[in-house]
Every structure is written in structure tokens, then in C-alpha cells.
Image 1 (cartoon, one colour):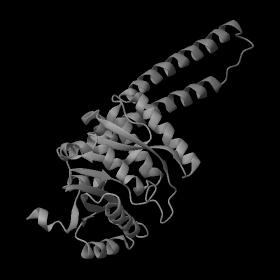
Image 2 (cartoon, helix red, strand yellow):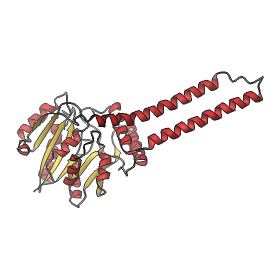
Image 3 (cartoon, helix red, strand yellow):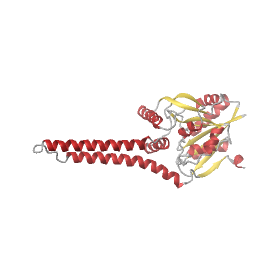
Image 4 (spheres, helix red, strand yellow):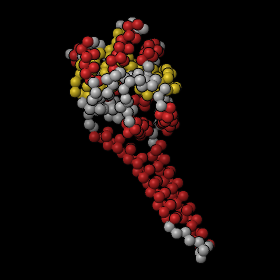
Length: 313
């Protein structure tokens, strides 16, 4: 029997993890009976009852494996994937926003020979403003990136074993999975779906986390912001020169009646100050990512693994 691995990163999902595991079990029992499966949960230092529930699940079912991380690491989802043993691995969040009922569709599409099957959100029941912002972000990143990124694709996707093995060889601590996917292969199938609204629990994502992830995508796969900073600086200089010449000529023509005062000076100071802050901010994002990479810290630190004994032996 072919084995399908399901990788689930969690953080404070005590209301969702048990129902999700039961839902996955039912799917394999009723719809994917010809497949074996394993569920790998990688928990990012949950501070609610998530870990207690995961322990209880693992104690009763050895098909469920757990990785408890020492802190909240961005590499958690990838670590769950590369710890899998199946012929393919499906990565999905634990919040039920990406419907687990689509798992059979992903598997059947993979059986057609694709290296990866990705879920693309065509609509969403979440906050309309957030969905619009995400959609515009994906569109922007695709337009400015050096690779052909897939729009409206988050983390709900199935990867063939060879793709998982390729991921295991990546040493970058700031992995951007959307970019690596299209770099590794063009054999990609797309399944469109409507994203559900989170029914239970509260998302651990906040504005800072979303911004950090967004900037990782931009700085990892695009030189455009740096080039834009140069062009913006050039435009600012031109505007400054034209403004200075305008007031200088007007002063010479209307010497006795024209009083420019300090308005032109204030405008130019604000303009150039703003441009400098923008340019420095963009450069800072790139330098910060370089700094993280050259420090060469461990990508993830684990506290404990459960039900991996057979693999380790």
C-alpha cells in the first residue's frame, strides 16, 4: 500500500486538532481505503491545551506522530514535511479553513503523475478586506518576482516524495515554500477551492507575522524593490532640482514682490527625508535577511518527538 503523509503545523489549536485528526481518519477509512497514512503534527510551542491533546492522540494511535518545538519557528511546517515517510506529503493548516474534504482530490491528482498539487483560493469566507489584501499581495509578488509564483496559494498542497527530499537538502533558514515549489518543478496541478471561515479558536497570525512573511517573499525572489529605491531617489532628486529652479527663477523675475519664505525648504526637506527613509527601510529588509542567513543558527530546535521510534531505530 502506498503511504500518504499529512503534515500539520500547529500553534494554540486545542479546539481544532482532535476534530481534524478524526476527520482525516474518516477520509482514509471511507474514501482512501487503498492507502496507508501517517499524520505528523509539528507544534510551535503552544501555550494552551494543544500539546496535551496531541499527546493523548499519539498515545492511542501510532499513526499520529508529533514534534514538539522548543519555540515558535518559521521552519516548523517544513520540518514536519521532511520528517514524513510517505510516497507523498500533504501540508495543511489545522484551522479547517482549507477543507480536509479535498484530500482525496489532491491524492487522485497526484496519481496522474504531477510532482505537486496545490490548492488555490478563488474565494474566501474570511474577512473580505483581508482576502482582498492577500490577493493583491500575491498578485504583486508574482509581477515583481524572478520566478513565476502561483497566485492565491498559501500552504495547502501535496508534494511528491522527490520534492520532499529536495526540500530536505535546502539549508536556507528563511525558506519561502511558494518560491521553492516553482523553482523545483513545473509539473504542478492546481485545485481551486473556497477558503472557509475559521470556526474555532483564534489565529496565531498577527500583523507583524503577516508583514514578516510578506517581506520574506518579496526579498527572497525580487530585486525590484531595490531598483525602485534607486529610481525613486532619482525622481526625488529631479523633483527637488525642478522645485529649486522654479523658486529661484521666480525670485529673480519678481525680486521685489516674491517672498518664497521657508515653504520650499520645508517641502524639500520632508520630500528627501521621506525618500531616504523609504530607501533605508527597503535596504534594511534585505540586509536583515542576509544577517539571519549568515548567522547560521539552527533552523529549528525540538523538545520532543513522539511515535518516531520505528524511524529512528
